[in-house]
Image (cartoon, rainbow, N blue to C red; front, side, top):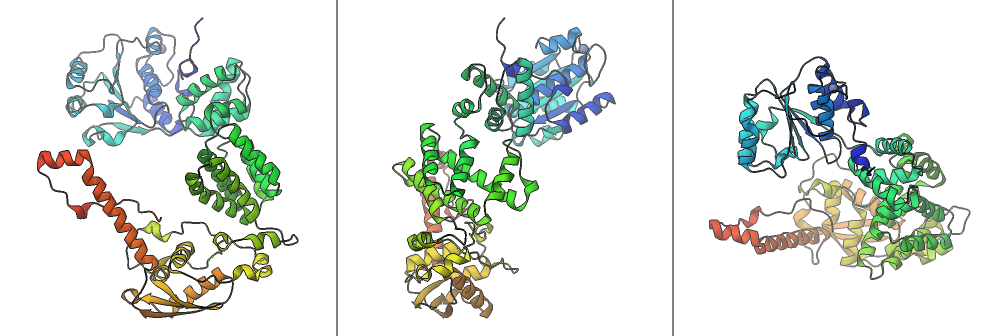
Length: 558
Ligand SMILES: [Zn+2]
């Protein structure tokens, strides 16, 4: 007996075999049972979520010899022939390979003739968006005046590429990606039926790797079965897929909680030994921290996407909110360090140790080592009480610029009190002022005004700023109060802030932002003009490039 791949063997044969897509099935079943049939259906969704499977079952429902039904018998010759792909009145076309108008013409030539054997002639056109314009026109003509015995089942991963004239003549069903839970449940039932032993954790890895596609999940399961020699184990599946195993991520968090540096380095070794991609590992660590933060604030909001909901909730109870925020912040910044590092392993170890060293400590424990070793640049951010302004911002910077890029971390009070030396105000240079303003991420008009200031004079407890005269129209005492509060909060002491209006002698943070933005646009214009395709178009059509029309989408803060 030849081995049949699971994806084919376990392809659902009836609507009740299907995992997920209940919203679509319910509508189709209702239409079949009440004989309210349409002549064209469009199934949309990403690959492997069941578009053609549903279409083939639907074809059976229409042609089962026992009558139009939502529960085809599966035994009559029509049902069997459809299942085996040899039913004469089910015409399947993969548009990805048939895009020429002649092919579609040939295909639609026989539309007017009655079905040879079945009740309906069913055209199943997969990846219908790949048809050429001419082919669409030929199809549209048939859809406009469909013969009564014809049903079109169209499937596509990209409905936006379909002409509106086609879309408007179809009943559209949007198929969802399958949840990890649905995939795990299905894989489990397959393995039990196939009598193959497995570890539950392995199934969650496969579900994650499949990214919502049941077909991909079954293909990955097939690979895992041969890779694991019949017993599907988590460690081997994790190795096969190159995904970090959850146990190792949890162990890192536990080592941090227990301040166990030795175990932390052991974890780093394990990451190196298993040759995980450090970026991918860091992404997974960030995702775990994100879920832990949610678990603390909204326990019901924790998803079970990796089958570990209970474990996440338990771990969240053992950590402080400050710990999680700080670890997240360090991991996020660590991505940049990894990108710049010659030795990613070293950078990764440093990143883990940084989490350990800078973790806020419990009040009864000594804070000496933490405090005295903390360079100013690593000083944790203090939560700002500045909120978004109700009035609209005069400079229509993109909305994303208003959002604080980094998550503020609440600094535990005891560190501030026990180490006044750490809080010594470093002399602000134009560069460090720019960095400070970016770090403070103050929103709204106040933030805009702050970004248009440069430092003039300072001492331990006071700071004089100069505000660019061209940007001073909206400045008032309330903004001064907020800026003072924000800087006092940052320096951990009451600061006396004064702001004079004048002409700037050095570049302000706002000017720098503007300059960098312009530089990026210039670079984009140069790249655009250098582009071979653009040059070809210019030459071919004697075209002109309107430089002002070139802009950068999704401006992000550098
Ligand atoms: Zn049948």
